[in-house]
Image (cartoon, rainbow, N blue to C red; front, side, top):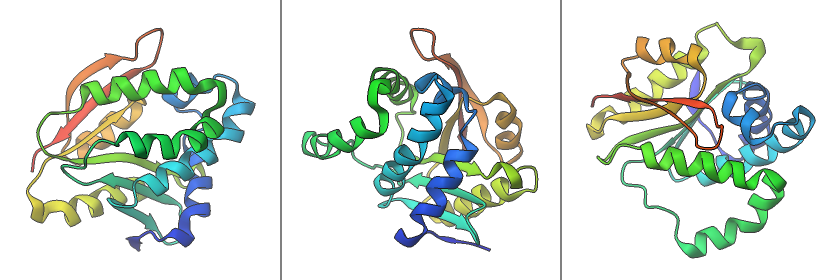
Length: 192
């Protein structure tokens, strides 16, 4: 069962996403020290869970998998929004802030210009990976967005995920690296 996530799901989802992304190339670049990464990822995913609330947040029954989507035409954060998030972001990122900004800026630079649904985060608890939960969560999101007739976009820094996304109808639009020794990413688009 895949359903809309509510605020009460936040702790379970953020803990699961922290486990799912513990070895992710982008998170490993942002937080090179594995102990620091384990400590900071739940805080970071809690902020991202809240930030994606205006979009669509889907979760499986016991938070074994989740997807966070941003709606088409979602406006960029205003200066007030950024200032409001500054203290929590610094608390979540600490000295990793410059690397996180490099990743964020590179992601923003490679986003398609046309209106699209953005699959911001897709994660599956490592204990449940390979069971089809991630694909099912993504397909459910795509089904819910189909009536808007907008393409769906994502990027991944994990090469093994590319085949999964291709099996769901996404195709690679570009491959790129985050500047200053950052990880390689694949940008992928699924037509409306």
